[in-house]
Length: 351
Image (cartoon, rainbow, N blue to C red; front, side, top):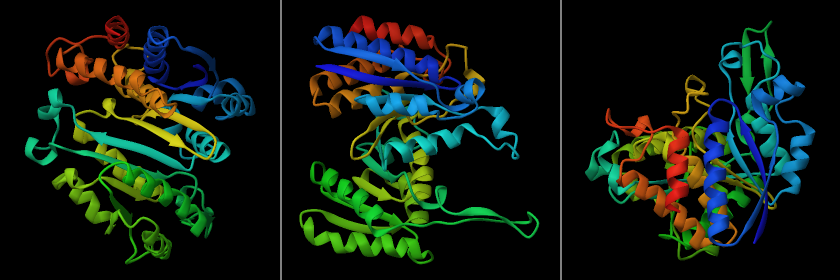
């Protein structure tokens, strides 16, 4: 197979972890006789510095022309610490999702047998955890009307959803549940928010089309608690943008490190793959960041193109690195640790 992949390394540790995912992907391509063409493009703070725009038109054209996008991370402290900044790296991320139509963020949460005791949660609470959260990405409060009034002393952000936006995400949730444990949980705040009542009403109306799927409805605050108490009870969770942003980050630490969880953002045409962690600017350039989430995101990419053996090969070699302790400092527990690039080279050698 021939794949054309756009590469948006972004900011902070993004370029370092992306480099490892590319090395691993090229090793897989060589092993299984595929061809991958990589096309780099600017985004985030790096793009602002270069052209004044966090998601330039040229970058969008490269992404549109590609079979998929491999994305690192965006963000920089100088923007985080400046509330008055008119242009921000995160604006590029929202613009990219909207323009590429990436309406569903697919975030798996699972445990690694060799790391289960490194989780902040007790072994008996997390054993068997294997869930996927589908987060709506292109609507809700992040895209609603916002502003200031009363001479800047009052701020507002509006959460708006249409039935069609909810339906297209819920369809993916139901379909995904059918391939897994046939359990779907719709997370909302229907006791308070009108937009959440529309979510619940819409999903309830769809239940008849998927009679094999058991559907539950839970408030977001309750789910935030239950993800800590018994995450293994969940199979597929669907939710809106803001709630999904928070819950997926909470769920990510179940595995023991945010540097381990991959994700995909998909639409009707375009697909993007990225680690769930941020740009971690404190580690940028130090060659210490954990590349495994990005490498596992590349595995998701291969799997979505039907290359399941290739994807499993990546997962197997990642598990081997964890079992043998060939890891970066975040997983070393004071023992021997290895550089980002060394872990990448080890994965390639073992492939």
